[in-house]
Amino acid sequence: MAKPKRRRTDNVVPMPAAESKAAAVNQPVQVSETDIARRAYEIYCERGRQHGRELDDWLQAERELRRTVNVAVA
Image (tube, rainbow, N blue to C red; front, side, top):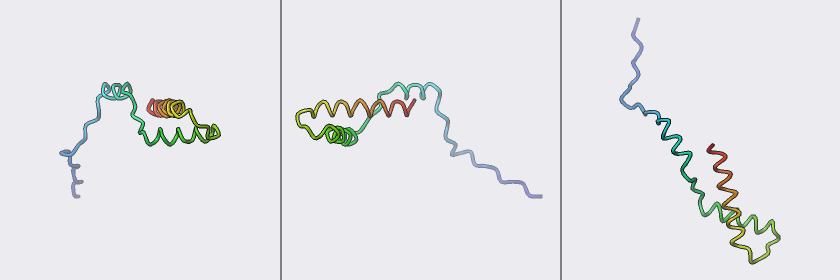
């Protein structure tokens, strides 16, 4: 009876340490400006396309996206 082939172990990827996973959770999550701009535009449209609140729309979009990403990471 033939011996089964042994698995190669020279290309093993080590598992990250528990500390590195905890550190990754505590790092701020990066949200792209493109995603923020897209959501800010959606907010602008939902508000009836009223001009003059661009900064408010941007900040609201940024908060929403960061909250969504943080919940997904946790």
